[in-house]
Figure (cartoon, rainbow, N blue to C red):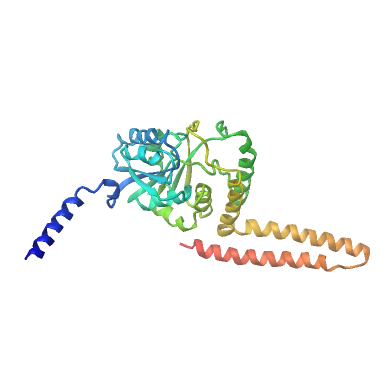
Length: 313
């Protein structure tokens, strides 16, 4: 009998303690919209960002929650976020912008997902309009416009090159490739989650994935503000962006890469062949260039077939 009493007391204590579990550790209830905020060392902006979201969404006839993912911050970001009306998820170490977004998206239970940076650059006041647009499309992107005065001059040439490459490969003018304010349908977003990177290229990649998959993407003009604190993007991230753009297009529209590459090599081979014929001495390099072009085109056709199978509904 004593053992039974102890067991009952233990069970009662467990039930009582379970009723006091903080909201952020419970299984989330279903809501209409989850707003995911990745935050790394944003102690000066996180509270204001959360407050601005509540101000923007509290008057709407929808249910929503705010999910803050602290990415191993070394300042007071985590503590400041916990003091606010938000569900806080903590990464044990710095895992990256994309990794934080993936974790925040997975921890929610909503029909629609919004993402927003914690640095104060994006206006939460645009969320209601973007959420309304998202009822009819797969993704709504906050378009910062061509005159982004807050982008440092040293980053503008790299940004122009990246945008030009993405526009060419996607065969479409992309107004804003990597805006950090977006609203998605959850089912449209989650199908691409395994393809999305862990770093800053998350937004660039999801843009290309959806556009190249012929999903409905619309842009909504917003005002881009001066950030609070310092940027976490490093110069080496530009090369990662370029690589991810090419990889994304090879996955969804490979002929945009393989056809021009093969044409360049074929042109060099033909030029070398013409030069050799004038000199009366045919070299192996000319034939090698022509054969290499044929091989590249063949690989492109195979990649295109795989891409079409992948995109089949």
